Length: 389
Image (cartoon, rainbow, N blue to C red):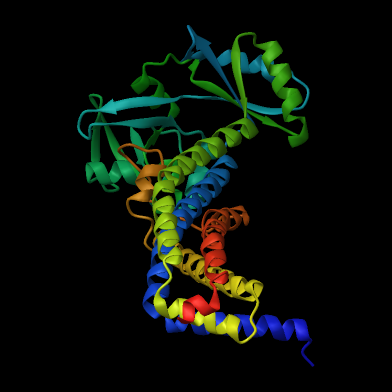
């Protein structure tokens, strides 16, 4: 048996839905306008969450600690022999010197990342899959291209490629699944990488440190900083915070640019809801004449606004899902991803934690319902006798 209170609320909801149906054109216009704004906000938040999730997955492949040198405030090379001092630190599992750097190629008018692949990295990429065979022997003169570089050159496995006056054989091309990591990469034997980047045999770009116990990473980081004064020591967690702040900042900037559209819609909605038509005034007067209170009329108006806002937000979230996760967010993706030329071919995947949903509700439903309160009050206090006359 339905309680009197529940019956009352169901009656108010039923009347509100019927009222929206009687004013189809006005309701549809409000619904479509708010849904477009909700779609824009939801797309930004969904893509930002997807990029943050992609960054978190990539960070899992990075070393626990990265150690590099600064000279005159800029990154510099460091002696590879310094890894011996780090291996003596308690808790440090392994230390590996890395040779990598940026190389500008006139042929594609873009920078590529030249990386010297260790045997372990070759095995990791081989498990991820590549078009071609990644060399596992001690040979030189080969390259593995990221899909972005391969597309820019129009290269395939087996082709020859000229890089800075040296000829290399393209042995493999990384697949799109690893594009977030390999899009702009030209990987090769570490000796070739050092020659191409102008590094001596005893020079390294940085040192990759693995720590046995993840909970001891901060302690190991502090000990490394003491062992190598002047070195820049960066942990994986610190890099994660940088990526979080970067993508959150970009997403927030784009969302901030959408605020004027929301404000304009609210001003228009205020004008539409404030200007009652003759039929609406008669409807309110009739309701009050048959015993409805001002509170009941006010609640009906608020319910109408809440229904429109909820439907528009749901429709906007659905459209945003298709735009971001099905179509790949064309246009918006290039504004948030952060690559200039050799961009990775990514397919965003859902990676939210619920905070984005609350943000969309706060930016669409709450302002819409709040903007409807004063017009709803003005409609509720209409004098029945004056309106019927």
